[in-house]
Length: 373
Image (cartoon, rainbow, N blue to C red):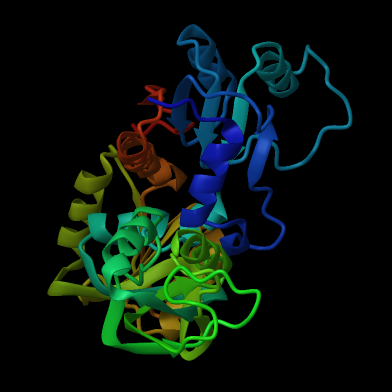
């Protein structure tokens, strides 16, 4: 088992949901603590509220991972008589680091909005509102065939070769490498001024734009040659859109009343709100956006949605949705609490794979401020 610092964990997480994925201006990242702190006990939460901080102190937590940032607007003073600022003081006094992944987690492939789309049985999904993209590169390395297997294992273990829902995406082509070591060379194979032919494999794999340099560095480190030949090519046809919200289709269309009940049951709420432009229309194509997504409803309409699931729909926006013929379901902002179980499982998987010496747990508190009667 190995210790892991806050900085190491952030580095791991931001491979999954880079800060670049966040909507501009969103205060994601480390809000309290130091990247040099060692994590012993981590708690995952949707919100960082005073009662959540008290829970963390009681459980000897030293790292809180939150979806909603605890500081949206920086205070100009710390007044212990102000409950919000007193919470900040408690975090500092108890040496609790806090990291927030907000819209970068919403936008990340396999993140918040994909979890919600899966929960609500939405298939064939695509990004609802792209705001950036990820470019992909092909890294081609010429490796002695006998060394390919070991280098391949290093690359896959480091997380390279992923695309969409697939991992271990690579290609091999066997051939012969030819070279002549010149004066000053220190060849692994062959001798100076002697032509050499080696059975080599063209090993080719996909990397994101933020990965390819580290991938090349790893290949170079593990490659047996003094000067390995590695090509890096940007792929013009692979630009993955990144954005918040998802849109797709139900496998089997259903009446809106039945789908509302499905949303209610899946979310585990006692009540929800619906904006019904047409209560007789079947639900076929659905958009979902975690959090407060009312302003994105025109994009849902533009992409053919007949139903939009999001939280915090405003009164006048509801009127606009009806006027534009869109049904909407509002299970409340707290439906994002799905992140507690999903992130706890994800982090536990990373912990097992990396043999991290720490404890991971979800917050046991319900931070939904609303009660339905």
